[in-house]
Image (cartoon, rainbow, N blue to C red; front, side, top):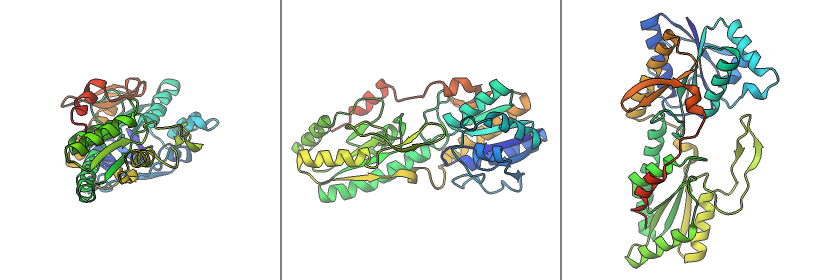
Length: 342
């Protein structure tokens, strides 16, 4: 079979490990041929491709980003775009497509499968870990480790200057990065989009710490936490996502804390640092297993399905099950973290 491979949405540590694994496993085990599609769905519409073979993917397991490039192009936002994507598959001589991405990328793959019969296989990718149906997505634990490293460094400077530091991390609708990194890093408070933000409770924590002789604090907050009446800005992308406010929640929370307590408070925004660089060993291994399984799924004809981690096993599930509902932080888990606040 001749198989197209694309990566869509935000870049993520481990993408290259998936590409490498799918190509090597598919070539060696099933005699599959691979074609790289550049810049996600944009590349399929433009028929912009590059050869993929074991030589091309050699040595990329530890590289961040994606050798194929990415974009947030949505074929369904272009007139006739979905049919054009299918026509491109035929013109390029592709029998199947491995789509590596998050809810948006996999949502397109799912629609093309159900509406046009396009033979698609999905691999879950998002540092936010908010895709249902899989215990974890690759790239997530790399992002968490980057945040934990930042917390460890910020603690020393916060303690030296009796400062409150608000660390803003990614997570627009799901707070997994803030939750896991704050728990592992020993944050003094964590705010996530799943639960209402109560700045006055943060102030209570800070005053309790002061009373116990702790004159500094680290607060981890997801970028999507609603704090005050601040509207998103800018144009929407092709999937309907709008840029967040120019002044983020971290800066607004730090300003509030300083105004109420009189303490020096600073905001630190990690931003795209969480996406970049070398994937951790865990994410390399998980991404590799996903890639191997994706090649097997194509050989088995398991189309309209996505590779998923369940416990310690890689299985495949309908893409419908992954993109229908966001996976968010459960209240019971967040309650465990709250034991350590303040």
